[in-house]
Every structure is written in structure tokens, then in C-alpha cells.
Length: 480
Image (tube, rainbow, N blue to C red; front, top):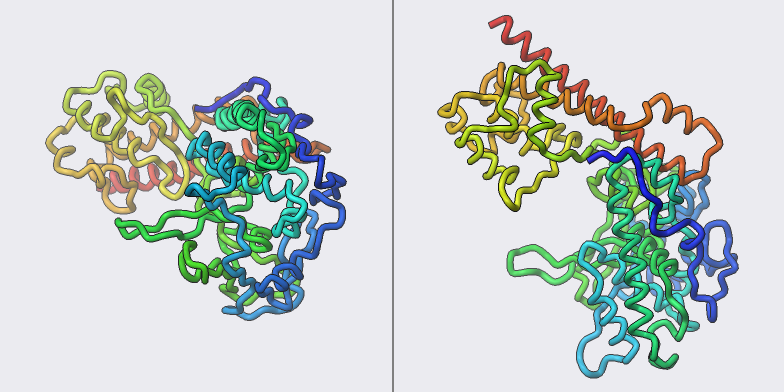
């Protein structure tokens, strides 16, 4: 599912540059925030009943942007930030006949938003608070960035520079924003200013894109009410000051939620997991995410991301070509035997509702369903295959291969060939990407090139690790 070319994006950089709520809040912007001199966020949190460690400050770092930094040494276990329940900004869907008219209209708009774009729901509330003259959250909202570095703000050329299937997700979001703008205007067309959820101000795809990006890049999904299955519902919230803590897979702090989100006594804290040295950013782990999600939702790319993956489409013809390139003798990828078809159906790789997306990379290196399919299709021993569970066939373990070394080597060589084919789908080489990054390019171009280069480096790493395993298995087979 690699993309070597791209069409023009639905939203240009110019059309999404500024939020179009201009009748009340001034849009005189600093380089980083939506107003030139926003209120002191730390002071506001303390004034409203929260607490902030005396050795913390907001710092404008050239690489990290506005971040929470330590001004002195902080010991492990220290409470860094504590937000009482009324400070996080959440959606809180209105209910019942006593709901305000503007909240009711907001709820109607929220119902038009698909679940995968949940950030837009909370984004509507954020826009509502930005439009108010007397918003309780104005000290927080005014400290938000003027613009975001997510791909819906990229130019057409920089979307093309991604050279990857992420283009599809970017265009889906852009198309949604344009369509949702029409729905908003239709619903609010005859609404009086008194009942208007945004105070009568115009809301377009630019303002909606800003709000959705603000939420997707900054919101945390916290525990809500307990569910019958023992889990908890997830409640997205914007956490003032906490959302200025940057990401790390080896963070020095973590979020502690006291009581669930439905409790009026809920609080959200950030606690130091280790000693934090002076002039060090406070970091949290945003999750084990691929660079696709980091770029789409947060606007950055993680170098050498151990959870990054490349998406491929399971296709028998492609696998035949890969196996031939790998020197694997005539596996039946395009025309599997009946018993092999049955297993492919169980792996959901065959049939009317088959899920054909598979991945390379991440901690497992090979998508478990792809690995199991390759092992089964390369093996001719039906009885041996049926002795093993699908779970066993899907795991690339360190022990003896379930179907023997010969089958394992053939399967891994096929995956190596797939990696090479995937690399060849990129129109540029790694050295060319490195050369671009050394030049004077825009931040969007830099992000796009970093993204595609990390995909290539990840495929090279998969090839290297699997080649080492093939070499080890071949050596063991020769010794035996």
C-alpha cells in the first residue's frame, strides 16, 4: 500500500492558516500562540485550585516548542502537576429538556462526526470556548498554538513528499472537514446569535481543522465509568499545562488519575517517575504508536520508532513474485490447496470480508497473519501444519520453527524480498532524503521527508534482522 504519487490535498496551507472566529477574540498572533500576550497558564492553574511544582516552568524550546521544563533538580516520586476535576476541558454531551439551545445544536453537530474522528467532537467544544468573551478556559485556549504541523495543513507538494499510503488518511480528513463545514452552516444558518453555539461567528473548514488538530495533538483519553466487562469507557480531555509535556518512549513522568472522570472529586496528576535534572523537559509516553499516527495526530515523527510499521496488501501474485526473487521453489501463493484455503480463511486473509492489510516492522517484525500464511503455503505437510494452533504459527519466536527450518528459511526469505520490493516502490533513496534534509526546506517538507525516510530505514532494519535469523537457521541446518 505504498504510494509513489499524490493528488493535490483538499485543504491548502493558506486555506487552513487561521481560525475564522474574528468578531470577538483578536487574532493578533505570536509566533507560537493564538494571542501575542496570553495569560500566565501556571498562575491560572494555581489560582483555580490546581498545583504546579515550584521548579517547573513553561519554556519555548527551538525544537520542542512550548514545553514544561524543570528549573531545578526534582526527585523521583514528586508531584509535578495536579489538576482538579473542573480544570480539564471535556465534551460533556448535554442531555434532557433543560439543555441550553446552543448546547443542543452542538450535540446535533457532534452526532454527524464518525467515531474515528472523535477529536472533532471535543474540537467543537474548544471552538465554543474560544468564541466566548467570558470563557473560563480562555487562559488555556489563548496559550494554544496558532497553527499545527499535522498533514492536513501541508501543501500539495508536501503531501506528495510523503510517498506513502498515509495520503489516503490525510485526504479522508480533509474531505470530512469540507463536508462537515457544509453541515455546520446548514444547521446554524437561521440560528440567532443568542442561541448560536459559536456566538454567531462563522465556522469554516479552517477553524474546524484547527480545532480537530488541537484536540488530536493534545487530548488524553482518561478513564470514565466502569463498564460491565471490567474495562472503563474512555473520556477525551484537554489537560491544561499537562498537554505541554512532550512524548518519549522512556519518559521521566506519568499521568495518575484519581477516581474516574464521572466523579466530581476526580483529579489528574503528573508524577515524576525518576529524578529530573535541571533544565530538562518533562516527558510522557503518548503510547506505542507508529509514525503514521504520530504524524497524523501529533505532527511529528519519531526517529528509530520501535513501533513503526509499513502497511502492505496481502496479494498472492505479489507473494509469488517475492518468492521467485527469493529463490523459493514454487509455493502456491496464487492457487493454494483446499486445506490451505481453509487456514487462510481462519486468518481472515481469504473470503468476502477478508482483511488484507498486513504489516512489516514493529516489535514482531512480521505481521502474525502474514507469517502464518507464508508458513502454511510453503509447507506441503498438511498433517504437520494441523498439529499446530494458529497462535503458534503466527509467532516469530526464538525457539525451533514450528514447521521446520527449511519452511522457516523459505518464509523469511520471502518476507525479505517483500521488504526489498516495498523499498523499490519509494521514488527516492535514503541518501537522497538525507540530502534534502541538509538543505533549506520548510518544516512541512522536513516532516514529510523524515517520515518517508524512517519508513525506509525501518524496512532496511527488518531485512537485516531477518537475514541474521536466516543465516542462523541455515547454519543450524548445515550443522545438523
